[in-house]
Image (cartoon, rainbow, N blue to C red; front, side):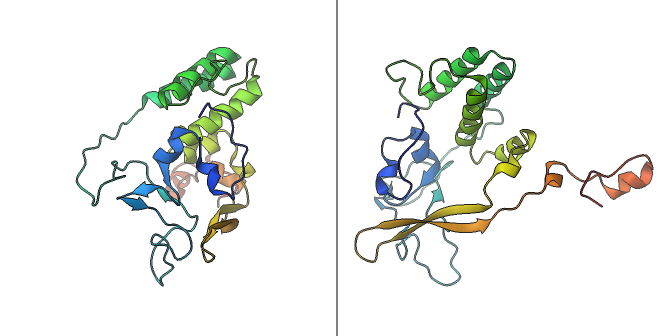
Length: 226
């Protein structure tokens, strides 16, 4: 809750305790209360029954972001929801990234303080919201990138961010999730591969439409496209 990086095990149920408040706002995981009961994403659970042809989670998680609060309700109901085009949180993150790249690292960190305070993270004893005093430019750059990943998740930023940073080739070759086995009455968690991930350098660019190349013989197609 104080912004420090998570260093626990990803294969224990305790991993969800005392975490960034945005975690519960973004995803459903096993045990979360919803519609008056606990979500069951263990194998054979009510939210992962493994019936043929039924669309269900492959990772043990579901998306919660953008939903109303139906924690204790018994049924869904119509909810009003405003979808912002440009969020204040994005303004802070854009500004923090620009400041850091200009070498104003501490000023950049202060923008992240504002963002984390807004998210409900506690300031901690040193009032730095989990960011070490004297943080360097490279470390803060990594932190800002991760902060964008969390704060702007499922808001159509990630696709563009990892390309403009040229970070996509550093992503793991396998997308992973969790398998929850409750056959013994006590949940045992194991990591599992969900889907392969392959990124080619050409994916940093879009192909120039063939119709445009026909109009201008001096145009050269982007590398990797034909």
